[in-house]
Image 1 (cartoon, helix red, strand yellow):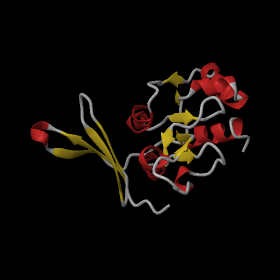
Image 2: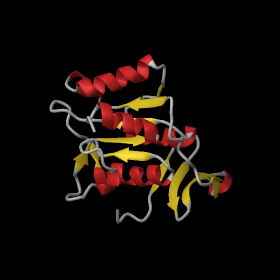
Image 3: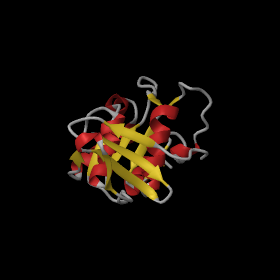
Length: 174
């Protein structure tokens, strides 16, 4: 909870940066002549969503809760967004102003996401935009994870609040 801000830059056909400011999350775009401008202000992530990004799908083999969550999304015809990467999949939540990224772990599929460099920066962005996060273990916010080492890893779920709650209910039984 000591984190003050977060900046995540996405390079591609359009180079953009999400930035946590005092009054919310802003997107800046690198335009002509390498000049940055605020392209979107006070971005909000809606509590409901029909867009999902499941990561670590191998965990479904050992975790019946995760398998039932993915099945729920498929049966209810949610739109699948899958790149296998935290950055593009969570960034999509800001582009569409909804969505969920879920990355639980299992014994055979351990945590890969680093808290200090991946989970915490996106957790602050998501929560400042009105979304919700889960540490994937206790169901508490990813911002409540005590960082004890540079390479500390965790499972996580980030995005639209209702879907993070569904993750906590089905996967964590919380």
